[in-house]
Amino acid sequence: SDKPDPMNDAVNIFSVASGHLYERFLKIMVWAVRNRTSGPVRFWFIKNYLSPNFKNVMPHMAQKYNFSYELVTYKWPSWLHKQTDKQRIIWAYKILFLDVLFPIGLKKV
Image (cartoon, rainbow, N blue to C red; front, top):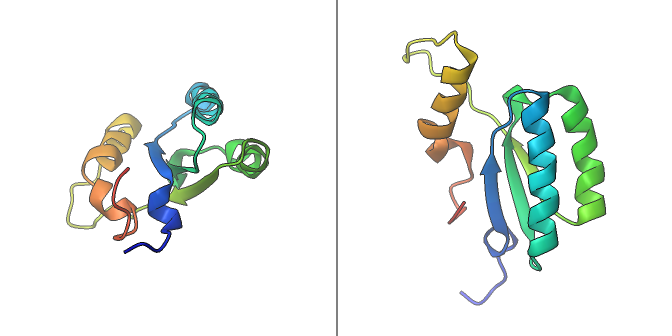
């Protein structure tokens, strides 16, 4: 189809930040991507591990640097052994749940 598809016309970037240091790295990455990409960019962040401050700053950064973003989440399945280690949970989100974190129509992340 020749119709524009805003979701798939953008460069879609997925990232996870757990802690203030990684959130600083994310802000630098966002800035660097916007400085080197001329087309639309959409960032996807796992909502569960972002600080309230980061969530408050994102709308301002998005407006200033002209990008869009989505906060995605997924409830831990009851049938899967519950993890207690934060790092293991984050890795599970990055690996096991990738196919359910994003809209079905999204072609490439």
